Each structure stands twice: as C-alpha cells, then as structure tokens.
Image (cartoon, rainbow, N blue to C red; front, side, top):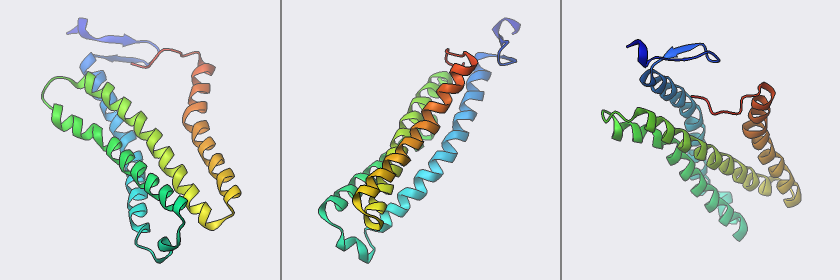
Amino acid sequence: MAGDVDHDPDQGRNETAAERADRRWNETLQEVRVAQTGAQILFGFLLSVAFTPRFAGLGLFDRALYVVTVVLGALATGTLMAPVAYHRFLAGHHLKPQLVDAAGHLVSVGFVLLALTVSSAVLLLLRVAAAPPVAWLLTACVALWFVICWLVLPAALLLLHGKRTRKK
C-alpha cells in the first residue's frame, strides 16, 4: 500500500515500517556477529587461564581480578547472544520493531560489558607482565581508547553533521 510507505529524504529510503524493522534487524545481527565472536574468543581464553601452572602463583588481588574478568566475560557473551534468543522466542509474534529496539539496548549493554572485560583482562595480564603502576596506567589508556572509539568519535560525527535525532 502506497500510504504505508515512509519516505526519509535524509536516508533516501522508501520503506514500510516492516521493511525498516527487517533492515534494522539485519544491521543489528551484523553488529552482534562481530562483537559476539570477539567476546566468545576472549571468554574461552579466560576460562583456560585457571588451568595454567602460573595461575597458582597469583596473589589474592589478581585471583579476584580474574574472577571479575571471567564473570564480566560471561555476562558480555550472554548479553551479546541474547538478541538471537529473543528472536527465536518472539519469532512469529509480529513484534519485530520491539525486538529490534530491545536488541539494540542489549547490544549496547553487551559492548559496555565487553569493554570492561577487555580492560580487566588487560589489567590482569599487565599486572603479571609489568609493574603494577604501569599496568594501571596502560589499562586506563586502553579503557580511554574504548571510550574514544565507541562514544566520543560517533558523538562527534553526530555533532559535526547536526543529527541529534535517533535514526529510524
């Protein structure tokens, strides 16, 4: 039906709400595939660390940091996999726009958890490989880099182009 088609001159698209939801869902899946793979590889590596001979020599703080890192990795992996589970559960219920919005929120939370996992893994590794002050400084730099790449640069692009409204 011609009346159901929305035209967004900024995006150059003529699509129905259903087509928009399908497009956004496919875009979300592509994002999740990239992040999910990294999270799963990191999580698998973290699980193996406890079974290495060097692990027994870690101090109390480093063991606690390891536990926190593994838990963050599990949470990141589960959160980044959640949109697929949502889709499986909601398939056929005509809730694609709501699914896309929920998946977007989950992916955002998953990215935060993944950044925290990577940062704490870097801290754990650097505390073993370097002096503690250097480890903390380099980890802070890594965390800052995530903030710059994932938040500051996209926000700057939005400001540069004057787009303050959320994309459809």
